[in-house]
Image (tube, rainbow, N blue to C red):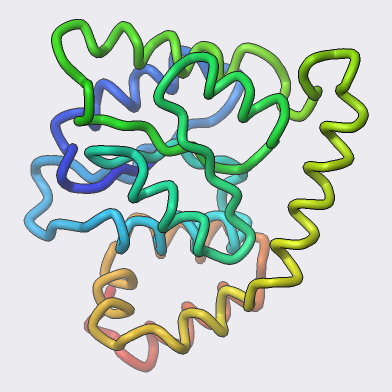
Length: 211
């Protein structure tokens, strides 16, 4: 999990809640935390999300920003990322069962008033309540799964690869993304996409001050 700096105060709660309901999985907290000096916008964090998933270092991301909408839109610009906006338990459950994506974005500020943690708990509980991709409702499950597969294939055809995207990024934002040591080092050591790992290693050697 990783969320924008604007909602750093929710980091521990979000991490603990994900751990509670994704108990069969290894959960890693990539921030952003209040102790960090450098602040990251939802746009910058979405690139970190794209790197983690494209590199094969993780298979699912829980993220968010103040509204949740901006992060969802930004993540869906990343190659191979299918991110759902999940403000409620119903949204989370249906996204997991019908859309079977690899990231969700939560609204961590919008409508997050008194007892907001209750909705957060129920939302993440619904998200992880069953294995993903079963389809819903059951009598339409086959069609739903078929449509999801088509959606993912169309997205794949319409997008450039992660390395090509990185090479087109503005130098300033690329440097800031690569400066997030916990993400980049994790991909280098745990990532399954060796081409992306080699690209990151070469970039670090080229600009050693980054890490």
